[in-house]
Length: 327
View 1 (cartoon, rainbow, N blue to C red):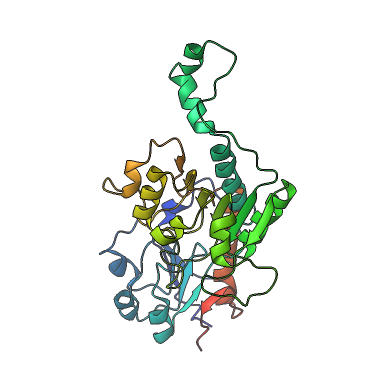
View 2 (view 1 turned 90 degrees about the vertical axis):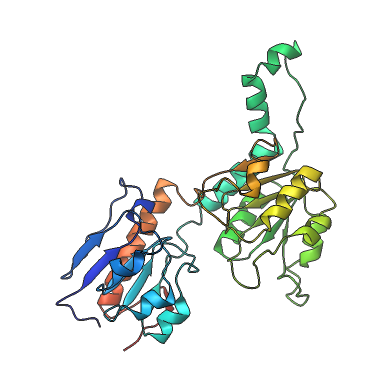
């Protein structure tokens, strides 16, 4: 258990949680230093004398961890852990905890918001109406963009965790046929899973719900787009980096896929030289600013769990550990 007499907590990026979200009080002796943003280069100086560091997206390197002799816990205010050098934390006996299962409603709902919008060309029709196309058509409707039903279509789900399963549940309720993808390159996962290559070739919609790691980075690139013979819609509400973004831009412009709905990119916010800049105005492309997780209910759940994780650690009952505990 940490020394209860001198705990210092540093929050590196408080602005990633809205100000209207209530943070539970921590009922143990502590001081707290709050930074709204912490860019690379200043993270180390801000956490140098901290016992507990809270980060959502601020990156913490091995060098910064090694320099912090008092550091006992890195509490990540998210599920993904790739912004923290967990291996270095383990080597330096620093525990790491994260947030789990808080987005089981909000991310699948955002996924289907993107799917509905693309299947029915909602953004394209809205933009056309605003541009005067309806009046120009001279009749009660016009048919410039495709409209497709979800019922009876096949949805390929990559990732069988909480979010993938919740997405499958919604899809089944809508009358869709669910193909749960086996891990790429694996054939022996059982009858409940469809080989990854078949998911690519047979799905009308493909949606990603897997973590970003060495085996999933650029999971979908030029070769995979070439296998998408049904010209599906591709959805990514998981992590930037699962899809080769240059390959996606090429596939959409070439008509290899019918559309794409992304909530995540490898560089956030979207830089001026990103390949998605070329397709932002494409009628089959929707990009949202990493907000699939951000319903009010989900963020409050995240904030509560974050404070509970810290309290549990201080009380000697650590939970949601990615590495540790260390005694």
